[in-house]
Length: 483
Image 1 (cartoon, one colour):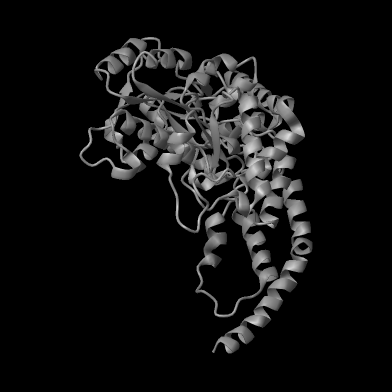
Image 2 (cartoon, helix red, strand yellow; image 1 turned 180 degrees about the vertical axis):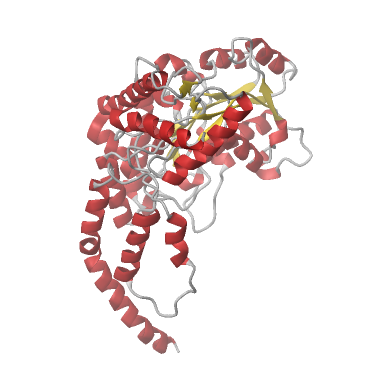
């Protein structure tokens, strides 16, 4: 039987080697077109659901081969793929790809880079660590903090808050990674109204629970009430707690008072976590650096690369002041794995993922290719685009800006006049659905207070003034058709 199995496998192995030898040639033209046409493709092709109906088929007994499968994949991507790399994708906070980052990611895929530990990829592990050092220099993160690459801000928050939970347990005299939370008091979490849904998800996953989050109310000026924040910490009676400071919220790009909150927290027994998924990039420009001043006083920091660093998905980064807390929180050992005291790094033992792709290639390449100045220019280009679009909104009949623009998000709505607030909310909700269905732009609606708004976020080097000018006209035309 073993000989028969080997005999049957040999023809497939031969086929796979033939396909591998022609793979780059087979894909070269299609990939060249995909990258060259990123500026022109619609954000979301209409009729995507109909195009994807072909996927509903049984598993084939005999495959069609790599070329046929890839040709169908490319066809489906053209007919139903969102152009997230293009200049008209403003939903969520989605960045583009610099050429260096894009190319490096292709290299990482070609070599199937695995960065669990040094021996699986010396270059991958060392490059990740070097890229993290450069990120600290780029953003002003303290040199002594320890970095790790993960899938994105959610898992970066997971790393930082897992370290916080480990610290909290040790402050109370137990090892939460060993004995768990059963029978222990709730872990207090103090934040503001800007707390992101990712942080809520993480606190749920960590067993802390969404119900244990205390959100400090806003003060009369619309920002966090620092007196209420102080009282919330004082009411802990000296018990250890996690404070989450939000450096950039997603509806209008506003910020918690970072320095003030960290200063107050330091007078109490707190771990301070700064969620700077996209807002931390404010540090790159003298025009916006004041928004995150003082963030370096945090115990853990989150930032996303696939947002404003303009590297491919997925790419997020966690920075933690105490490496030992990371190692204890994510302890991962077995006889066949590297020793915990091995001087060569095992990145999979200080974070949630053991199977880790070569994310560091793209980060290292874009920082090497464009440096501090190039990435500052990308950030400031997007700042300029946001301010330009804000002026367009202000001067376009039928559009109403709903907030100031401190960073890269412009909150606005369609308001033709003559409608009350409830009617405007309903109209803008329907208009948001119409924009998605039309597919020329990808931009979503949200809530600013009780009002329904559009909140395009500009974080792609490809976006041009003419793109956002066209967005304003597009929304007015669709709105007129609905009203």
